Length: 239
Image 1 (cartoon, one colour):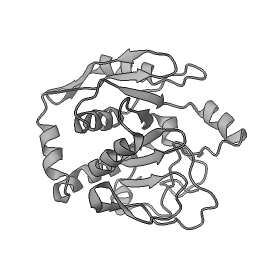
Image 2 (image 1 turned 90 degrees about the vertical axis):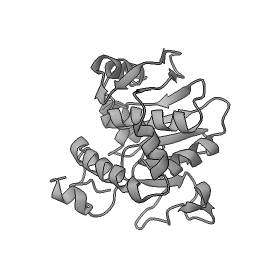
Image 3 (image 1 turned 180 degrees about the vertical axis):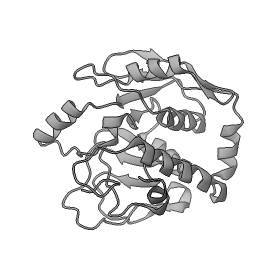
């Protein structure tokens, strides 16, 4: 699998994905979600209640207020979303929290979001790959730019459909494991185990992606299928 730079084995780069995320955000102006997106930008502050399913810890903090991110709140969320297997902490990219906030708001502010998986250290990722778990070498979990979540009281498919409507990055539905994968990569959606779309999903607008070329298996939790070539907006930014 190639990375954004075209070299094999290299971890994803945050700057490249930030450039892509900015392009996706500007693209919202022409999308059906533009009105909804504008309403999100009117919020004076952003907070999202998250519970770590493995430790029982909860954070419900204002991490953004009046256009500025709060460093201490971001650190608290990063600790909450640490690698559960070895306790390693990596700064969670603020875009992940924004995705979770926008989703939480779109779902009419449920009591909390349950975190299944946040940051995954390189060592844990390598162990999972060696164990035959089907984990991607370039998983966005390894740089704190992805999260797997559930929302108590709301079916995961309904959560996923709302995330797809948001068009703010990657949104994958994992029915058997009962969670939704979110990341700040390119805007795309998939259902784990379905190799080709048979119907239109998410408010009748966004079809599931067709079967990708040169793929011998379906992606595992947190796996990102990177495109064969860098998009133009990343090429211009040196991604």
